[in-house]
Length: 365
Image 1 (tube, one colour):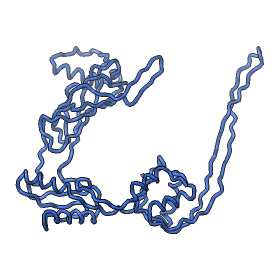
Image 2 (cartoon, rainbow, N blue to C red; image 1 turned 120 degrees about the vertical axis):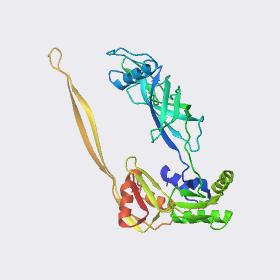
Image 3 (cartoon, rainbow, N blue to C red; image 1 turned 30 degrees about the vertical axis):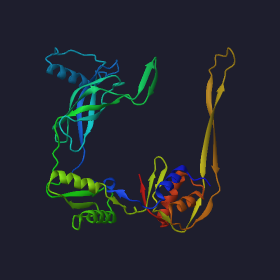
Image 4 (cartoon, rainbow, N blue to C red; image 1 turned 90 degrees about the vertical axis):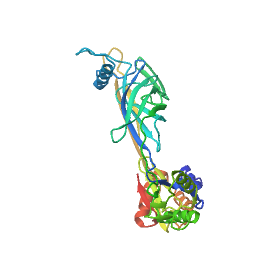
């Protein structure tokens, strides 16, 4: 019997034994993080695909303010009809330990009704953090991975034209101070909270650097004593990140996406003896147009009506015995034995969980 591709992939990926992973893959250092930046700016030089300024007055206000800063004062009451300018939001992420002069990538997104940002140039835009301080300045020509054309009401578009990216489009103007380990300790934070994994990380660090170097605060945070010197501290953390640890086996979980019908299980899922009755009920509705033509010269009108046919198809239900299983592959075989589609599994798995036969946490997203 052929298994659904989704379950086959999950079986291949998750059926193996737990393997060792580097600490840098399962944990992060507290305080070493990215910071989001955002700014409001203008893209100029568009080929008639910019904002319709009668519907986006903020674009006109921004142009007037920018020209005023350059010493050009527009007479009051002037109605500018702009086609080559678009108002945009510029977003970026400031990596940890960034220094002034470093360049970062930025994303430029239209907030008006511009048809396309292709070929535009972003005018100098300050990027601010959550504290409203300027951390970078952005400017440059955008790369828009799309194309489009329209004529006489017809339109063809490939990919998204209202979002562009500028590699190395912003220059860092201010660094974020990070007192990493200056207090004598740093905290490792597991990406998935687990007491067993935390204990194994502590054992790995203490085995490498000596007893009492690390201690677990809880199931996620591990406190590690660090050397005094900055250079020694960097070397020390580099060694810790490269230590191998075998993470604990994750708790049994089944993830169901009710919108797409996707079902994902991890290898800890087991199934007790149970009986499942499964049958399909489908309703097919088909409509055919019936055209009634009037006789010649009768001055009648052509009438179009629809004739609908409704058919209900029902497959006979079956009661299948699902025996207890101790591996993901056995669970997949049991569920496929009743001919269930991924969409049918949504209801079957919820019923198995309610009956207590499915030994896993069921999460619907």
